[in-house]
Image (cartoon, rainbow, N blue to C red; front, top):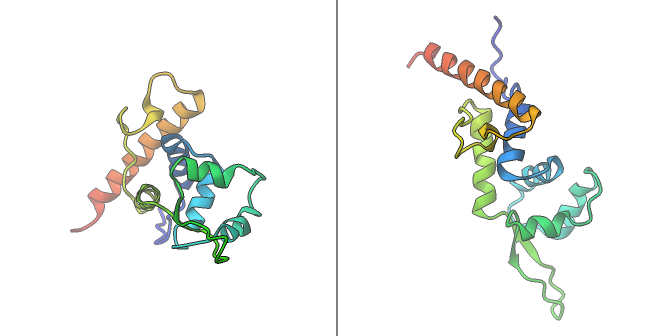
Length: 149
């Protein structure tokens, strides 16, 4: 079997679904947070620029703030003409770092406490994804055994 050194995205769909379920995000919100991850501090205008690529949702910005995925770094000052500045809180940066670790070969948890896809009353598609998670974790374990230390 041929091995590719940059095969990060092989399980992206599984990892993405895990993130959407675990963190209760939709695809567009997750895409937005991934974009903002390396932005540091940003204005709402930067958010709106990238949002043009996503499906229309006029509540997205306010919802992400309300749910704690984005936080206000500096409030707007209408007297001084300064715009509000935003940043991603530690909650968001940790979530994204977790996704990157999964892309780099860390296993996805299969416990009920760490992964809601492994609860009993889940949808059929969640059951299909959890089967793939088990398969993916098995492949990761096999690769770790073959890697020379």
